[in-house]
Length: 247
Ligand code: GLP
Image 1 (cartoon, protein in one colour):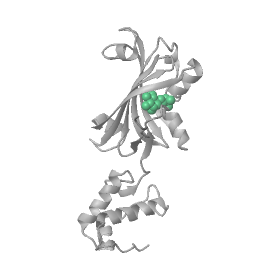
Image 2: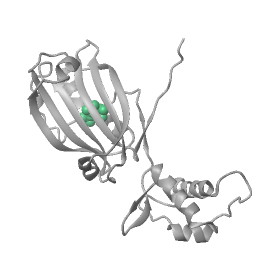
Image 3: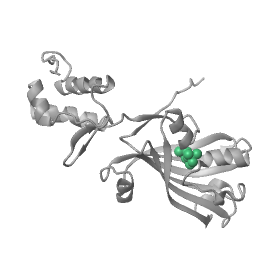
């Protein structure tokens, strides 16, 4: 289809107009996930703008999570960012299912270790008590979304280490087998670049921005459930929150 002419005398920057036109096509389903976007050169030609302007439009689509570039493949449409409501204590499996996506995991580590460092205090256990350590690559509809490190105090959840976490949901097992109900969590959000290992596991560029969410989550009886650090791909996730009034 022929692109609509841009408003060249208005206040809206040209790259922004092009970017929005492409987003509208994606939202209307004219461009599907996996489809190629026009190249910088093609965009510049069809909209009669400079390559710089076209490049900026494509760059913004990528940083907003609508597209990715790959050598030899060009720029193609990806799924838009998932919005993670950070006021919810929901686990990954449940969160993805609610979005109609298929959650899965790749279990990278499942070990028992002895509490040291900050863990005893965070998990309110004795130094040296048994902790289940999990490291999982979390996947939705086949796309790696996050890397999660979890530490769970085994003294409160004996036998939990026998669960196969390559297929089971941690929060579901805790709920169904141990009757755990999450009450609240202390969370810290932080942005930082992907490590080399993360960029390989998540198939994202080296140093891509990650959204880290560290949490200590507690039961209604004030017993720690988990100390966790989840590292979400910055180009696949964004955080949202409803801010209550302060009175
Ligand atoms: C979220 C939390 C993690 C937690 C996970 C459990 O992603 N941020 O701290 O470990 O959910 O998910 P699941 O129940 O799918 O194992």
